[in-house]
Image 1 (cartoon, rainbow, N blue to C red):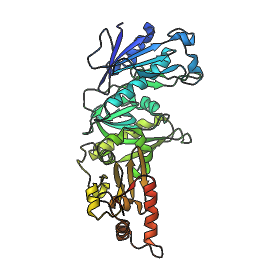
Image 2 (cartoon, rainbow, N blue to C red):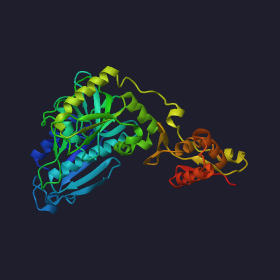
Image 3 (cartoon, one colour):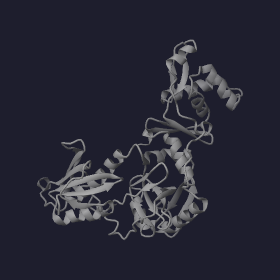
Image 4 (cartoon, rainbow, N blue to C red):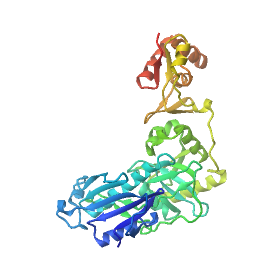
Length: 418
C-alpha cells in the first residue's frame, strides 16, 4: 500500500499518514472510508489537510494491531490529543492501538472538516437518509448517545445512507453526503468504537440524483416505549426545541442571521418534528410516511430570502454615539444580541453562544430597543402600549425589574449618560 490515504469529508480533502499500523488495519481504514473516496497513494494532493496518525505500542506493551489496555479502563489514556504539526494544515495524533486511533481519527476528520466549512454550510449534528428515487433527505438530530448511529443502520438499509454524524446543508437546501464509517460500540470492556464501512453494514449508497433536505426531526428514544409500538410524531415549536436544537448545529452564531435562517430552513421542510420511539427497527415505516408527506406538500422547494422584522424580531444593531448625543446625552437602553425570532408570544434570542427563550414583557422590551436606544420612560410607555396597563401594579416598577434582569444577562446595555 501507499504511504498515504487520501479522502474527502464534506468537500474537504485530507491526506492521512498511518504510522505503526499493520497492513490489515491499513486496508480496513481505506475500506471504512471508501464512501468518502479513500484510496492509498504515494503523494499528497495540493491543499489537502495532513494528519499524521501513529500507533505507539511502546506505551501499552502491545503490538500495533493489538488491543488497548487504556480502552479497557474506559478512558482516553489510550490516545494522545491531536495537535498541530509542522505545517499550518497538519495535525498529529497518537494512540496505543489501531482501534483507538481509528475511533479518534473519525472524530478528528469530522471536526476539521466542519471547521473548514463553517462559513458556507449549515451543519446539523444529525444522521440523514435519502429517498432513493427523489434524493429527498430527512435529517434526524440528537446529541451523542441519542441513538443516531443505530437509527442510521436501521434506516440506511431501507433508504439511502447519507451520514450518521454531520448533515451539511447549503443555502438552497442541497445536502452534501458524508458517508463516513459508522461508529459502532463493541462489546465491553472496549471503550473505543469500531469504525465500520456502510457497505459492510449493508447500507444503501446514494445514487446520482441530487440530495435535498425536505425534513428535520429530533430523535426522542424512550426506554419505556413499547418495543412493538410504532413511533409517535408531533410538531415542535421553535421556542420549545431551540435550547436543545441550537447546540446540535455547528458554529450557528457565526452565520448571517443565524436564527432567522434556521427558521426559514425548518419552515421550508414543513417545520421541526419530534419522533418518539423505542426501537430503531420501527423507524423505517414512519420515515416512509414522512417522505410521502414531504412530497405531497412540496417540501424543500425553496427557502425564503428574508423574514419580516415584525415576525423575526430583527437583528440587533448598536446605536452610534452620535445618535445618543443627539438626544441630549440622556441615558438610554439598547438591545444587544446576535439574532432573534418570534414564536408566538415568546422571543428566541441568540447572544454569543447562548440561546434564551423570553416571555412576558421581555420580548417587547428587547424588540423595542433593537434599533435606537430608548430612555426608561420610553420603554415603559411602549410596553404599556403593547400589553396594556398592569392594573393595580406599577408599570414602571415591573419594567424596571425586567430591564434589570435583561441587563444582567447581557441582552440590554446602557448607552449615553445622564
